[in-house]
Image 1 (cartoon, rainbow, N blue to C red):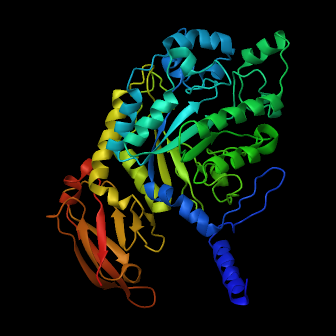
Image 2: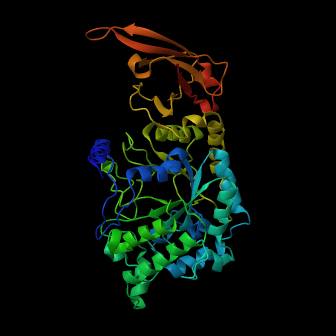
Image 3: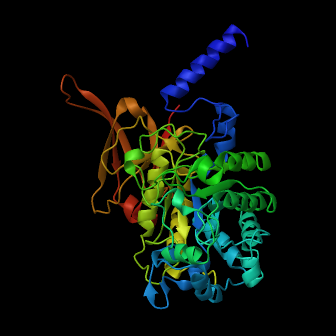
Length: 483
């Protein structure tokens, strides 16, 4: 490398560091696999995911048939086995007869994702209860053995038919496998009667054996279903992480070798998606490509870091007949807007019932979000944050190439609404309301008194009809820059 190239490389590294980004490539160590690509190569690999912005999460498994209770006792949904302390034999005896996926259910999921405007889908191939939705040679505890169906294969085919990128959620925790050793981290939840059963039967824990099992299952997922776009690991806590718990470096290398374009989250390493105190912590890219706040949106996003908020429509991930507190379509749309305005993605969950049918209320939310996206999706897809634009509280905006999109809050009133933006931040623009060509937003440059001298603003007047005629009462104002 000549001196000019060295100098340019140094400047690029300083720029990335200033932006809060890790400079690649970076060496591995005993707990992390090396990242061998450059930042430029990583940007190419991440490009589709960053542009997609909106994905569908699918939580489906044995717990779906229990629908939130075990023999009349409420116990949550996908966590019901450990919430009620059930050993795997007792749990499976009740749950397996109720697990009855209907033919074509994965097609219905993918069609709903397409209608909602999603660009990718992530399916729970195996949740913490250890039941695999795919045909695996590693265990009889799977959908192929139970109902004669490889649901992962059906899902992959359905997702691709509907133009979706394909993602696999896979639990590294396993309450079924006898060798899995939860004692690596005593705080990590585990069914008390499963531990008791193993002890009574004299079955020793052996995490080394469990890691072989885990890696064999992951290898099947990576090689039997064509290209895998996303691996969504779940989850690590305390000392139960990385090399010690999952042989994570080898897992990540396996993913990259079999699927060079694959994107992975950071949950092979200890991380709490619920903990906002970690929102300012830099993501080590050896732990994954993006961070995963759960059921929440970070207050300011994660500048310089790729992130995805995973969100439920109700309160639960898996199906629960008592889970009726559903978010409104407008709430989900505002969450999408927040993700666009803060540089993240939204992964929105469906929770199919025992036969794979998505609850009617959840379907309605997705479809109504889709109607909004059909009109306003250009403000979401391929968007980046507009950090330089100052807006009143409750207002947000995104940038897509040269255009800025303003997301007003729900202000359905009989009056027109005034918006002031400092003139130096947006220059000369031509505003329009997406999907409402007859709704005219006026704009003029004005000066208002400042502390020392007058300040210039662009004054927008948005007609009340913009809200009255908008899908879900949430209009989008597009600012087209005049050249």
